[in-house]
Amino acid sequence: MNSILSQYMMRAILTSTALVMVVLLALAALFEFIAELEDVRNAYQAPQAMLFSALRLPILAFEMMPVSALIGSLLGLGAIASNSEIIVMRSAGLSVGRLAGMVAVSGVAMLAFAAVLGEFIGPPLDFYARDMRQESRFGQEEERLGNSTWVRDGNAYLHLERVNSEFEFGSLYVYRFDDDYALESIAQAENAGIDNDDRWRLENFRETQFESDGVQAVESSLTVESFDVNAELLGSTMAKPSSLSLRGLLSYIDYQKRNSLDASRFEAELWYRVARTFSVMIMPILALSFVFGSLRKGGTGGRLMIGVVIGLAYYLASEMLANSGQVFDLNPALLAWLPTIVLVLVTGFALSRIR
Image 1: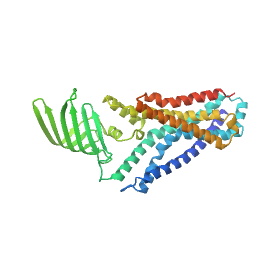
Image 2: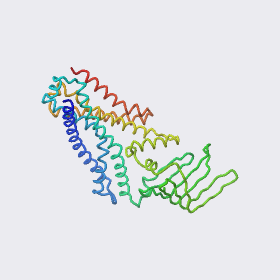
Image 3: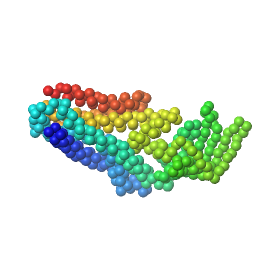
Image 4: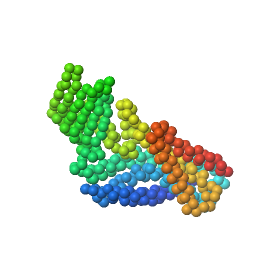
């Protein structure tokens, strides 16, 4: 019996959540497309802007999962409660804890879906969309704009320009320092690329070495270097944090810490994403606490308003804390988890008051 009831409540919650997600994504895609129309130029026209908006939908769906889960759960459970079905379940001997456990199954299913979106689907499509937009807008006439980056590899600093999506580069400059930060050499390669073994192939390589007894110049038509920076890390340096998977974030954070670089921006994104994914599981349980009492007799509009208010409050609090943490150099893990912890406490308190 419990299994049947759990499946029944799960179907109601997931169906309502899917409908809410479709509506929110439709609005988000429309606003995204309108915003992109202001930046059309060269090969980036309305069809490309539409494609960009479509490719961004998975990452937008991940960002809106907590709000969608809350509103969908309120609508689904509210419809069940309005027919007094939850009261009948309580009368049959089901405790609030048992009902919360049944609802939590839906939360786990949505958490798994959010994890897949945030790890395997959203970030690569978002990176591809931004890369496509950049190449379409600027093409060859301004190939340097937006693609240059500085990379540190131990005591070597690399400045390079990406000229295509296959990680082939134009001019590459390498500045090497000793342990006392004294300049050892300056090198330039007219063209550079990374082969399948993550080795750097530098064409028309010229290096000026500063030695104690003078300056020495070295030239080579082709030089192979083995920097610790591979194609994956370079992709991370040129991508926004939201365009990286959790694995990419962890890898890039490790690289930054190994090279004594500031990783706070990427750490904030890492913990923010983990906390947001976990919050999806809490939303159906929070919604359960609202379907008892006055909201049980309320209409769909009242449930929708409650979901929108709580969802927006959670979203704005998460964004505000994440941004303030980077400004004031606060612990990113604590700030990312604080709204979710508050959500868990509110959920526990609300359930404890149900008789």
